[in-house]
Length: 74
Image (cartoon, rainbow, N blue to C red; front, side, top):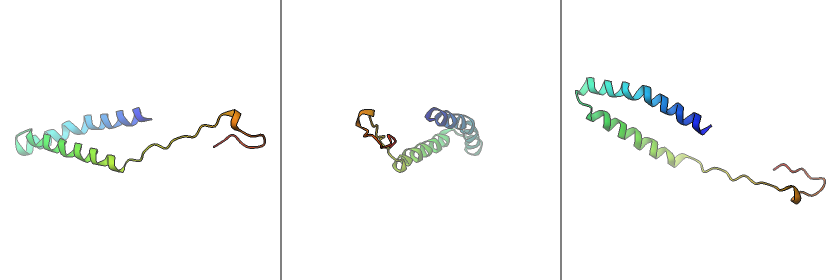
């Protein structure tokens, strides 16, 4: 699942990035401002890590620790 999300984002960036760069170049006549926009998006992505949740730990139960009559599901 992680690879799917990663490559989807990579594909979207591969399509939208050149379009944004071309629009900025047409507007300002320089690619410098396109790099500023890319830096702003990188800061936005980095700041979104603040809202990411830590993965939950899974509890594994061995078959020897289950008492008879109880389910082994957690």
